[in-house]
Length: 106
Image (cartoon, rainbow, N blue to C red):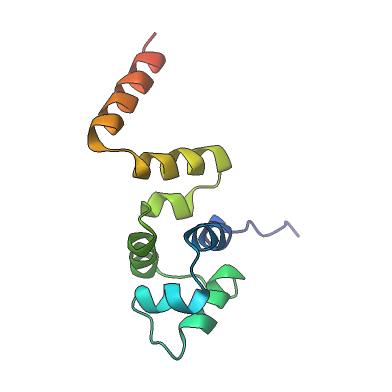
């Protein structure tokens, strides 16, 4: 039987939450989850017992100031680029895009 492919959401969620210095409960509450179940639900998402729907991922991403794509990205390098992209200003993002476009259109 083939091994089940793990979703990157659980790992990315834990990494982003810890970088932000938030507890599972605090992140859950800020993302709109009921305060009495926030910690348990976030724990279930991080341990992959349950998977959050897109709306929940979007709210979590907003709280953590990250694009939703970060949570779905399988490749660590690309996730790092997405995280850095979110931290860049609009002019910096435009410059980065020009560099990438130039590099790929040789």
